[in-house]
Length: 635
Image (cartoon, helix red, strand yellow):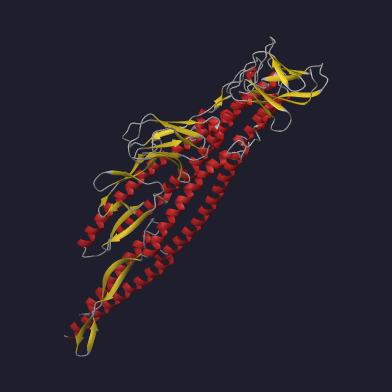
C-alpha cells in the first residue's frame, strides 16, 4: 500500500465524517431526527519482513446514535401524557359547568324553592305565584341547557374519535410503507441501514402513540409490527390494517373503535381495551365521567320533577281543582343491540314514585337462551332475572318486552341518561299552583270539650269530598253524616301512629280526631275549595328541598353537591396526574435527547476535528508527492 493510497483513504474517511457532521447540523431542528456518527475501521496491515505496515482507514457505515430502551420508554410516557391531558381537559369542562355559582343548577334550585316558600307565606299573592312559575321556568331552562351541553360533549367526542382514527390510519399506512422501503434499501445496500428512513418511521410511531397506546414488536431486526388494544394488529410488515370509527352495537348514538381483520372483516373493540393517547383519554372520559355526570343530572331531574309532581297533586289550586303535574319529565332510553335477531322491542318505564330508588348506572338486559338477566353495569350486579318472559325491574324502573328474545340478544337501558332533555314546566297560569290542602276540619263553636280535628294525610289518587261530612261525638266514638244527614262510613279507621287520636279515611283523605271531646261535640270535614289563603300543600312542597328523597339518604341539593364534589375531585386529581406524567415524559425526553439528539457544541468540535483530519491526510499526500518528486529528480 503506497503512502498516496493511505493518505487518500484518510481523506475519504475525513470527508465522510464531515458529511455526517454537516448532516447532523442541518437536521438539528428536525423532529424525530437521531444523531448520526461515522463508524471508521482500520484497513488492516500489509505483512513485510519488517512487520505489518498499515494500509489506512475505511468507512464501515453511518450509524444512528440510538437507544431502543429509552425510545420505547418515551413512547409509553408520551401516550400516557396525552391520555391524561385529554381526560383532564375534557373533565374540566364539566367541572366548570356544574360548579358555576351564578349559572349552575345549585343557585337556581335554591331560588326555586325560595319562591315556593314565598308562596307558602302568601298563597293568595298572585305576584308570589308568578315568581314561583318564573323560577321554575329558569330552573327548567338551565336543566335543558345542561342537557344540551352534555349532548354537545357526546357529539364532540364522536367527532374527535372519528378524526383521530383517520390520523391513526394515516400513520399506520406510513409505517407500513416505510417498513417496505427500509427492507428494500437495506437489501440493495448490502445491509447498510437507511438511517433517515428509520428516523421517519420512529417519528411516525411517536405520533401514533400520541393518539393511541400502541405496542411495537421488532421483527427480523428492522421491521416494525404495531399492535393496539388486546393485541389487534395495525401494522404487520408492509401491510396496514385500518382502525375504524363505528357506531357501538349496544348504543348506536356513540362512536367506538373497530378493527380491520386480515380477512377484511371488522370487529368492535371491547370496553376499556383501547387505552393511551388522546383516543384513550376520550374513551375514558366518556365512560368514567361524562356518562356518570349525565346520568346523575338526569336522575336529579326525575327525582325533583316526580317528587314535586306527586306532592303538587295532593293539593288544590285557586279554582278548587286538584293539582296537576307541575313539571314534565324525561323518559328512559333503550337501545337494541344491532346484532339482535329476534326483533323484540324493549320498553323501560320509571316507576311512580320510584325516582327515589334510581341510580346513576346503565343496565343491560340479556337472554342466554334460558335466563333473562337484568344487570347493573356500574358494578356488574344482576338485579333481576327470570326464566320466563315477564316485566323485569329494579332500582326504580322496569322494562318489558313485546315478545321473547333470541339467545345472545341484548338491550342497553339508560334510565336517566337523556331524562333531563324532557324536563320542563307544564303550568303557566299562577292560579293553577296547588298551594292549598284539599280538605279541612273545623270544630263547631258550640263544642264544650277539648277535642281536636285535622287533615293529617293525603293519598295519591285521592278525590275531593263530594259534600260536607259532620263528625259527631257520642261519648264513645264518632258517627259521620253527610250534608243530607245520611250516615257515611270511613274507608278505614285506625289509631293514629303518633298516638294523637284516631285516623279516619275518606276518599284517600285522612282526618285525625283526638283530644278530649264531650258528647255532642261536632267537627265539620269539608273541601278546602275557595280557601285562597290556605298554604297546607305549599308548606309540604317547600319541605321537599331538604327531604331525603333520593335513595332515602340525599336531598336534591345533597345529590347535586355530591356530583359537583365528585367531578371537582376527579378534575383536580386528573390535573395533578397529568402534570406529574408530563414531568416524567420531560425527564425521559431529556434522557433520550442526551443520547440521540444533536448537540451543537459537540458537533462543532467534531467539525474541527475532522477538518484537521482532512488537512493532515492532505499533508500525507503532499509529503508522498514531495518524496516522489525527489526520487524523480535523482534520476
